[in-house]
Image (cartoon, rainbow, N blue to C red; front, side):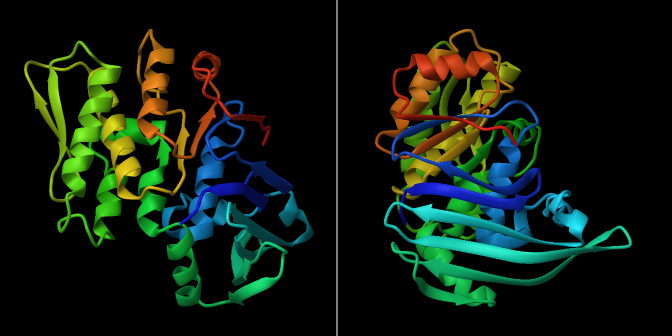
Length: 297
């Protein structure tokens, strides 16, 4: 496992041609206008590591403009701070209005660009991906604010999906550490609340100790803290990427909430993908941003 140095997308969904997202080792702020690629970036990372498992519509993976020629190669590459770069690529074609995927493959490159390993087999790729960015982290560390709102309404959470492929959830103190971290983060973000503690059940679902009836915003903040604490405690190195984490939370002190999130992450690599101007200014105002990018998909 290692921090990310950059993410490269080539002909993935709305991104025509090649675009690189360089990242710093600390707190990153990536400004992307509404509808211009925040969800696409998270999905592309998941596609690189897990294929179509978390892709909403596999037929929309190739960029439409690139497919105008009839065929297109889609590629997503993750470059890690240790110099290794893991790539997934696939050929797509369009026939009679139907998009079809052809051959696919993967490469592992070293610091100098030399090929360390490559193939077209899922098993070999999974071994390299698990070493650099484990499946648990794909489920838990790619956090979407809009998805968290659906979790508050009953959808499965990232921690729930991650626990299904975890070897140490029930055999270590991970659930206790996650509960303590989630509670501390939540109380820092919502000091005046009827909620007393957050916990995790054996399947990783959120458990709430509460007196009275919490508001919708309090519940959504609890869901966010539940996700962030798991991502922080499960693996100590993998980056944590957040798309509009406070999108569905009504709060006046947004700077304070982002400050609490950043504080809780310690020295972790954090990437905020934001479009709301108030949230962008709130993150800047924390004084903790190490690198800022502006991307137009």
